[in-house]
Amino acid sequence: MLPGTRDPMEPKVAPIDATLGAVVTNLDLARMDALTWKTVEQAFHDHAVLVFPGQNLSAEAQVAFANRFGDIELLAPDPEQKAVAISNQKPDGSVMGADEHRFKSLRGNEGWHTDSSYMPLAAKASVLSAQVVPSADGETEWADMRAAYAALDEATRQRIAGLSAHHSLYHSQAKIGHVVQTGGGYGFHTKGAPLRPLVKVHPVTGRPALYIGRHAYGIPGLDEAESEKLLSDLIDFACRPPRTYAHRWQPGDVVIWDNRCVLHRARPYDYREVRVMRHTRVAGDPATELAPTHRDDRAGAYEPSSSNR
Ligand SMILES: [Fe+2]
Image (cartoon, rainbow, N blue to C red; front, side, top):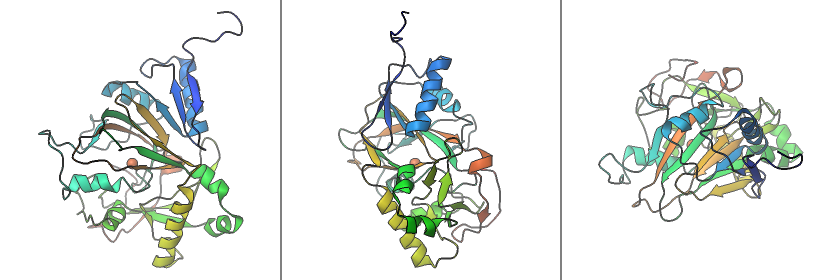
């Protein structure tokens, strides 16, 4: 190659018009050399959300891609199943009804959240790939908690410094009228509700970010109403332009995001249509994503554990 010319397979990283996100093209995620991987890893830390259009990864290739970022968080009872479907389609091909348990979990995803904050070990990153998309809507949207923290006024920064919140999937689902018994799915456990600081310093970039979302509740030192108001005010402030990006999916698209510094939510669509996404979750590092738990009154028991399994 001549000096100054561009390698034709050098990945192209195009920042999105928001404080987060980039579209990455001119690469095959299933066949990355060391230099391409370095570019992707750096872009992940710079932009926190990476969109890879038209990758059409197999399940194995998606798991291998996620595995480059860390251990896979196992979401299904079968430890061999490292990718799961996020879908409103039932095994017989029909779509779920509005009052079905799993449909209510999908609707819960429409609230701003970060993955697995309700588990002892919160997630590092999440990968989604689009398999079947509805004819309209059904976007996934992300919000930049680094930029949100940077935009806070000094009084709010001082107020939240040192504050923590509990995180519980029982809590967030109950708020949308979905009361689930212990054992009723991933997250409905007896390990207790993790207590996590409202400000998280990113272990790689060192940037502070708001660590909030719909699973957060019960800030120690504040009464219930004050806690609820502070947490919802922070979400309202944080999750707005220019800190948000909504991706309209095409089948084959792959997105990875950094759960340590962004919130995300699913957007509604016509639920009579089928939507199938394939999801792989990257486990957090115990040194920085493991949190002590406290009794969760909505759980059937309290058996503290530092393991997500
Ligand atoms: Fe999620």
